[in-house]
Picture 1: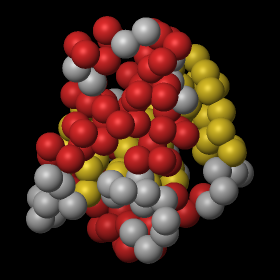
Picture 2: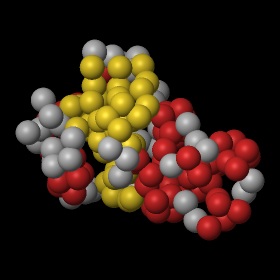
Picture 3: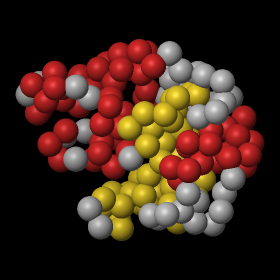
Length: 155
């Protein structure tokens, strides 16, 4: 199992990049949430659930306009946290069809301003990141430019 010390070591690399995002990926029970809870002891590091980034106002926005408005609304929610690093748990919520979002693009964009660590059910195969959703192991896939931004908790 990956330790919080290993994540902190990788974070030192990620924190120097333009996109300051680290993805903890693994199956159920792999320790993603535990590591995030342990990391919350770092000064200024705060945990939030992906659902906490949205309010009722977001669902009032017409579905077609949500992708364009999501980054600004989530940025406002992240600013309210006053965190040095935001750790987002249960990111699968962002893939809910009702939200009509491209979660990876959105998180990459947000990570340019807000350092982010996310946990997600899924796997990394080479430079392809597979996200699990509703029991579908390859619900979505994305090419990762730099695999140093991903830690497989199952490794």
